Amino acid sequence: MARPTAKLHWRRGTAGFGKGHYPRAHVWHFDGGATVHASASPDIVPAPWSDASAVDPEEAFVAALASCHMLWFLSLASAKGFVVDSYEDEAVATMREIAPGKPMVAEVVLRPCATFDSAHAATREQLDALHHEAHERCFLANSVRTKIRVEVR
Image 1 (tube, rainbow, N blue to C red):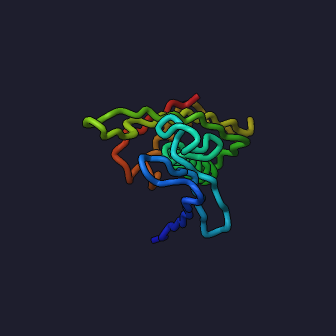
Image 2 (image 1 turned 60 degrees about the vertical axis):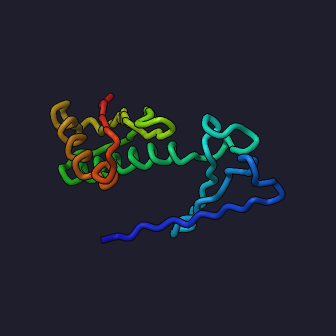
Image 3 (image 1 turned 120 degrees about the vertical axis):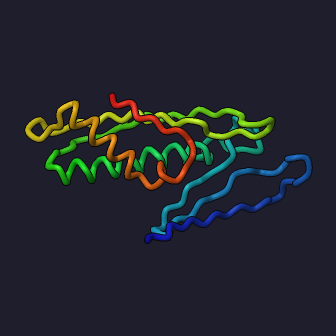
């Protein structure tokens, strides 16, 4: 089995540290050389202690779920002889408190839209089956207790 890794780097810099007055911006480093600027969400930690231009963990979670689903969808479609020309998703998460001061990502809705080569397109029934199987096979969907819905566009 694969052993995914990620490294992160954070440094306080010249800011203080008391009473939440420290920067939340940090960097994620991945084994292929990619780096992603990350931060707490400005919806949770106000500026200047967060960086709105960075990816926050909740956004990364939603993107990872959508990406996992897409990669399985493309793999399954290819194996069945369909030709996908493009794929887009507008995934969105809903947060809620499960106890006072204990929020969670309660639901992620994936809204995938696949465009096929007209000579090798899936029917609506086949499309729904591909998305169902992709969801069943997604490593991340199988790893979380967040409800994940797929609303095919």
